[in-house]
Image (cartoon, rainbow, N blue to C red; front, side, top):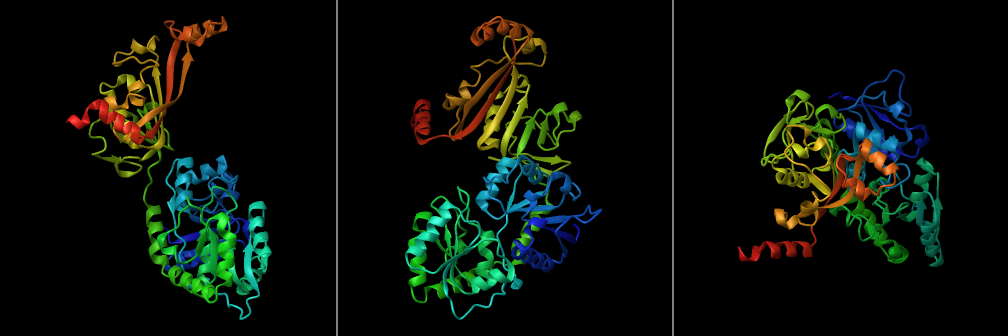
Length: 478
């Protein structure tokens, strides 16, 4: 691994991400990296970079000059307008880190590759603010102000508190405002929200009392529960006013936050992230029976090694999840439960003797809400039986046992929902459709439909479904 790394930021973020850059630079140097900060990709540069919080502002073509072991640190909410298809492709190409565990999980599903949750960590260079003896600002907010934020700020003013809010203020000017503030308030811009540690970490490192929005379905790391004062949106006014008006509490919250945060050591947290980033990552989408359809962006599995798949294996192998496979791209690989977001199997199932095991392996490998894309010849087509290696024909009722009758094949944890069923007509089918025959009539006409395409979604069984399965199987009598 190269010990040189470029800290790359977009010119539009000058000043805005200085605190984040300080954290990464000091942390990397603590690990022995030689770092350089730049607001543009140097001419002729094709080395390794850590893109600090502004990957969404660069184009794919600009970033193509970076080596593939570069890292993107995402700071954008996974549901924001900044998460474009182009940016998703960037996150898929490079190693990606994220400031939020929830955000990382959501983005991982979107881009089809695991994104690492990086905890913000402490470096001494962060602690720089000299606090004013006169705290003449009760509550400070900085950032974009829109209706949901303005409602809280106006509410605090109506309670008689001295409230200041600014946007586009950075560096020493912002530090001066913070030094005169009793409390800094953090609120979500997007919904659903995430705890914005990229806004909070620097405050904790500078002994600032923080009140942050944290709603019932949002996460906070256990070590931070006493580091900030967290409240749901509809309680922010009451909670913030109480903190400001309670003698001595602002100081104790600020001190506790600093003590908690400075225990987050760069060598441990950033070191783990760099080690994780050096390992090959399995894609989150897989092609079963990849053959000639090999896809560089996915995990390719095929029973025939002549196609040079990533893994030589059969989806119907009863020991599929017990074996270790050797892969040229990913080293030694073990397939585990809930590993993939999608599985594609085009013209595979009609070749498989033990289809129940194949479907069981499929639902086991998929994460909840994962999708199984299946294409097979339709039972009345020429293709259903022209291939001597076909062992079955399939029709629109072939999915019933994996969806509604899950209990019959012994599934006790999850089932599939059939979310889409479509067909490819033959020339005859297209001719019949042009003549006005209904889809149902065309399905019943031999040689009119070539292929059937199913999309199945994995769903965890509800308690009534589990109980029903136990009852009809007679598990209680066993």
